[in-house]
Image 1 (cartoon, rainbow, N blue to C red):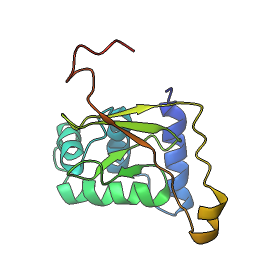
Image 2: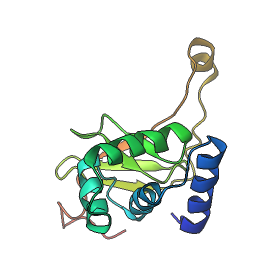
Image 3: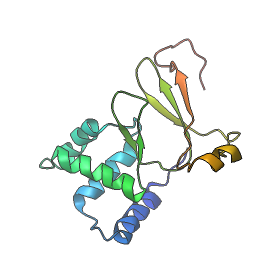
Length: 148
């Protein structure tokens, strides 16, 4: 899955301005770290990474900023798969694979799934999101699996 980080960063700045929020150095660093993360970090993990770059940043700032990112649509919350709420900067439609052994979350695309909500469901509910999650054991936890 190819993510153009420059375009995502520009979109992030535009979304902040559209919502009449400043594009602060803290927000830029937190967003950049989120985009660079392949492990769908929780708040504490991201806080530790950001603190290496911005030592005086508080945990609360990172927490509130991630909630802000989700509210303006530049980050997704991955909730309910692991013991802690996790975040990702990739908001494009894709799937997740959760390793039940190590709790790793792996992104992947698979064209045959179309994310279409059945008409019966649309009539009964106001669907905001469709999530497809595959669960099992990743190749790092079960090395005898064939390579991709």
